[in-house]
Image (cartoon, rainbow, N blue to C red):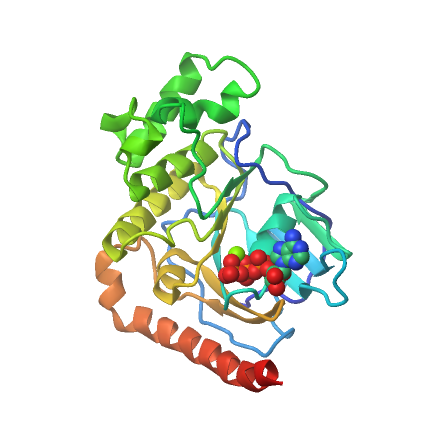
Length: 311
Ligand SMILES: Nc1ncnc2c1ncn2[C@@H]1O[C@H](COP(=O)(O)OP(=O)(O)OP(=O)(O)O)[C@@H](O)[C@H]1O
Ligand SMILES: [Mg+2]
């Protein structure tokens, strides 16, 4: 089965909001995260990965974007199709355009060319149906854990009993039931990250955009949060586009992993490791084979980049 990045069709952008409150319930056609995955990986050279999957939820078609004042596009020829309920990960060296891609998907930036759509609707501005988790948890210091999670609701209206129950359920799923009334300064970095994830999930987003949310955490905490994220996303059926620098994290979480290189998609690899993914998976040969495959792609990109940088 194909990967799918640099050639597709469809409409426009979505939206992203760190808060927001949207009814979710399951998007029809969503694929359960617990089922085994597709076939194998397909690595291709830049701009050649394609996919004809018809069930794309987030779709980018030949997207190009330049920041104002820059003569070169930061991202170009971007094609991707994220199926409903799937997790796709973006890997790439610093400055290659990963965060820019997330902001485009969120409707925080607008492409100069090409189209972005979510569930068939153009992404024109940030929308409550898209959640955004930043690298820094960005919690409000004067609100306790529960009120930070409820923020997407309280920005619009007074949270009701259902909102509070939903927030508590999420916090329980993320292992924070005992910390409801702590303030951010009383939490560890990993606990703050969990609160940020719960806050993004409270509005039941259809799409979750995550920008290196676990980058600052130690390895064991990261792994625990990866498991928590997989469990919560599976229960909500949310589609996830996840940026990381960590190859093993990308393979553990992702249905597909895409390598971004200088603003373009260098390759798209289907992760053939089945689900559910638990810690033992990390030691399996198939898991390590995908990691190795990605490492080779990234190292090839590094080698090619050295002369360019030197020049
Ligand atoms: N607001 C901005 N104005 C101008 N240039 C920008 C702006 N934001 C980012 N850039 C540039 O766009 C390029 C891509 O930035 P981006 O933040 O998308 O990279 P990234 O892949 O997320 O990097 P990192 O892994 O370090 O977070 C970089 O060269 C960066 O300097
Ligand atoms: Mg970034």
